Image (tube, rainbow, N blue to C red; front, top):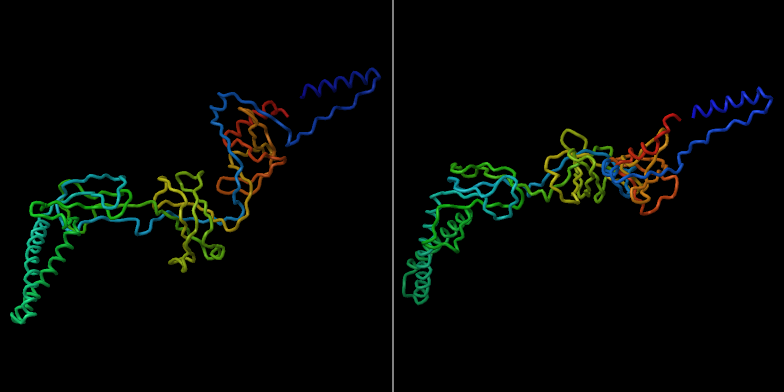
Length: 382
C-alpha cells in the first residue's frame, strides 16, 4: 500500500516537471463492515480447530432476575437406614454409589433374639388355635346354660390375651423382615435382612463385616436424586416479580456453559431467618447425574415473555467496532456476516443481523476466531 502511494507521488513530480497536468489522486475504497468475505477451509483445519455449528436460538435475555441458590432434596427422598435390633453384620451385598430399589436387602445381621420371637410366635399360634376351639365350645355350652359364666369368661379372657400377644410378635417379626406367613418350625433363622425403605443411590455405607451394630444405629444413607429441586434466594425488592410457573435457567460450577431448565412450583410465604428474602422452589425439568444435592447454582428467573435471537458468546467475534458471525454456505465454506449485538446473559448474546438471515441458517459456534483470523490475513498494514 505504501509503495503504491510512493509511485503516484513520483509520477506527479515527473509530470509537473514536464509541464504536464497531474492526475487526480486515487482515493482508498471505504472499508465497510458488511463487505462479503468467504473463507474456505480444509478438512484438516476444521478438525484442528474443532469447528462446530448451530442455529440461532430464541432466548429471554433482557427480562431475567439473577438469583443464587442450591440443589436440595425433600426429606421423603433421602433416608438413613437402621435396624430395630442389634446384631453382627454377616453380609453387605451393596456398595456406595449402587442404585437400589425399595425392599432390596442392603445387609444381613445375625441376632439370636429373633429366634426366640419366632419360637414364641409358633407356640402362641398353637395355643391360639386351642383357645379358639375352646372358646367356641364354652360359648355353645353357655348358650345351653350347661357351664358356669365364670368358666366362659376365663376362656374368653385367655383368648384375648393370646390374640394380643400374637399381634405383638407378628409386628416384631414384620419389623425385621420375617414373613410370618412363611414361618414353620423348620424355617426358623437367626439372620435378618436390612432393606432399603426407598429407591435411590447408596450415599454412605457405615458398616463393616463382622461388626456388632447396636439397634437404631445408621447403617446406610440413601438419596433419590430424581426429586432434586432448586431452592433460590429472592430478596424482598424482587419478590413481587415472582409467580408460580415461571421458567428458570441455571448453571452449576462444574459446567457453567450448559444451561439446565427448571420451573418455579412454590414460593415461601415468610422471610428466611435473619434476612429479608424468601425461597422460590423450582422443579428441574431434566434428569442428569451431574447435578447433586448441595451444589450451589447461579440462576435466571424469566419474569416476562419477551425473547430475542441469540447465539453463544463464542459465535460472535469483533474487529474494532465491527461484530461478525460466520454463516455456513457449503462444505467447509463460511461467509462472514456483520451483526449488531444486544443484551448478554448466561453465555449468550443477542444478535441483530444487518442482512436477511435464512431461517435454517447454520452459524459457526466454535472456531469463529480462527475464521476471523483467516478473513483478516494481510490486512494488518491497513
